[in-house]
Image (cartoon, rainbow, N blue to C red; front, side, top):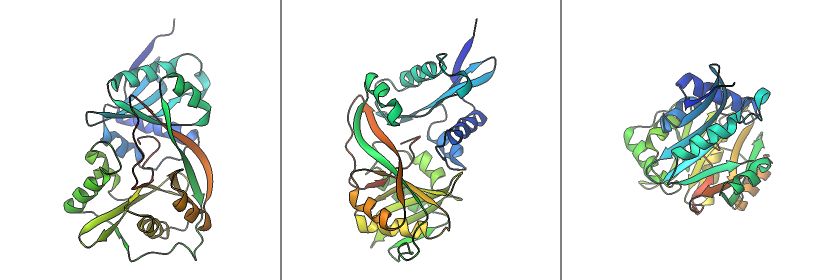
Length: 281
């Protein structure tokens, strides 16, 4: 009889789960596992059979009220044996009593609805090489290689305008090199920030938050113009103006997901232009 063990993942096992995400075509960042683990070290769960990991999930606790589910993957050669269901149940149990979010692919949306999740909005991944006559650095946005503690505090504070709980531990890793951080100010007030990281294919911008569309464009241009490769960004569908800018800049829409919530509905923040990560919210 098969004996299944469900337990939290060690750091090396989180790295394996992120590699599985790459094999699924999700194109994670090269250093994502380290920052993901910083968000909630105990928030990654795996199912094991005979000592081998056969399924995994992230079930991240943010503060006291919010949780996010992602990286929900079963090993392809042994799907249909209940391993995915086992980690799903363990992950949702860990987030009991919280509003829980996820970004669901279309093939799983009905399954998530049956589990109590409700559609909030669509997210579209735009990607491609930028037209060089459009995407140019802006003097409105400044790329910083090593953010100091004062700037980190300002970004963490601004991030709370777009995210329902504090995630300082995660951002400390996410904003650090080799990821590229870009910020915009009006006087001494931070008006937006964006992060770009190297992925298995090209680069990905996320998150991207700004007080207005012009600032979001300036942040994106300053980041994307630094690389001569494909650039990707996950944009909530309500951001039609920014999506139109991406299209004329040479990026095309592709992969789509639906942001869904269980336990309560969260409004899309007006400052949120690019999702930080489909895996962690």
